[in-house]
Image 1: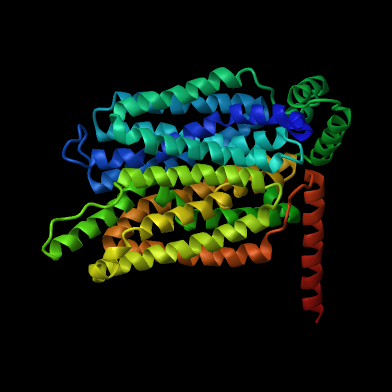
Image 2 (image 1 turned 90 degrees about the vertical axis):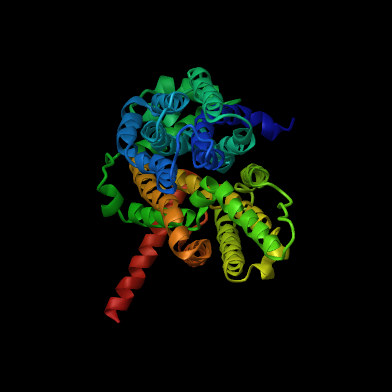
Length: 482
């Protein structure tokens, strides 16, 4: 074991236990992929239409926009740890409801509870992981949020096709219960304690998170919090303070790209997308007068491959984010998902107008989606949560995280809900071409607007934003004078 590993193992262990709750969120996120085909089949114990299915998928994300504001207050008043523990309760209720569900409205209610928990987790978890980490591993620890989410999604792809809907829910229930049991023994964020001038508790918390002498770091954290808290943060500071306004603009831009590249639809409708492909292949062979040929892989097998690629690439992202940097990973990610969306749109277009042209390319959707997942997971899936934990001072960080999650939830809901609507009305190729256009626009935005924050302290990042704001103001003044 290297010195570097020894010096950070407590941080990694704490973050791993804390992000069990984001793995729980991942199980909720990926659950529709193996479950929806069953619910819409003739064997379903709860008959479900296409429209009802789209609501089952998307209502969770819609409800996730309801909890960021109260969870921000709870995290600020009672602590990040307490709020994350409370966030496990809606997940537990959601899975219990699915176990006993007898109708579509009960499934709606279960997904609504899951959405409430989802909103709490993704408001508070980025802050907690960002505040317990040293500068050297902050990016890696923050990307664990998404890595564990992808592990939860993969679990649904691997287990869902082989068990009943209720058995899957019972298995998923184990995860939030385990989180509560383990997280009870982990430390609170030292930033939270110092915000209320509880120096002794902050020191005890930091000793639980670090190996070796902590005095210098504790003093630096205390000075940083004091500087941030000279003016008590408010919601309005996100608009009135120029540096916060710039950080908010950049953050919301990145989260817009993250959602409009189509990630939410690809994950939730993975098996539906692959069903479109296998159906196309079978129809071509039947038209040629031969027996329908099955696809080389079944849709659920392709979904498992896709989920495995997500997890593997997120692990790679954990390694690279503090070495390569945030901006290069995001630019590579946007370029890759844009190209793959365009390829998928083109494939499905020809699959509709002339199936024989793409009959021999049945491997293309899986290959394209694997590259899509690789590119998405290495940047857009993980790095935005690092960015939001770094770009804002302590006194407004919760407010920024809250707004970003509400904003993201609205876009994610729109993508998941409209995927089925646009697919049915204009064809699945239109959906993917639209995702491609937004991906390329996002690439240009990040190339121009996004600063690099790798290896920088919170104070250094704020100083960099202030310099950029001053430079922008000087340019505007020169233009006006001219």
